Length: 257
Image (cartoon, rainbow, N blue to C red):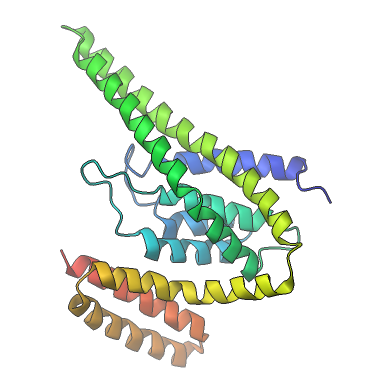
């Protein structure tokens, strides 16, 4: 089966369009949090018929990137592009489905996108500033229409930035997956273990950036609640760990405020 057929090409274009719209939520429009990895990942997985892959990618990248915020001149990594791209690569890279090693490989690929997303974001911000300066330079009654044009021009730029990057990253990632599948089995086993341990890395990053005291109490509450839920509903251990981490993160984040 060829790496690309009409189904995959249309899927890539569809996800690029959807991902570009979701990406507007980061700073340009709304900020309803749908651009956060923990939402964007499952949403992308659902659109591609691989919701489990989206949940795993979204949770892992949410824990890693959650505290990187666009404050001042700092340009954080575009976690939305990384999440949507990694989920799409995992879902489209193998006709037999998104296996755990494939999900791990896709998450690793998302780290290679960070530098380019930052450069693209910085470039768009520079152009946006030029639009604003041009609008403010307008005089009289023309200023209102100039500001409207500047606003919509900025939205188009942010949309195109994400769309173009998706059209680059996802096809390249699919090609990388086809090369990855030819590697020895030991690489697949290593990446499966990587995915299982990755939430611990994310939790460690959150603890490092937040007050450990604030995290501890919510982590304990999350563990008790998740353990009780696991006993009552016979939930698997992975779900118990996931609920513990999520409650600890949410409680600590809002507790710090």
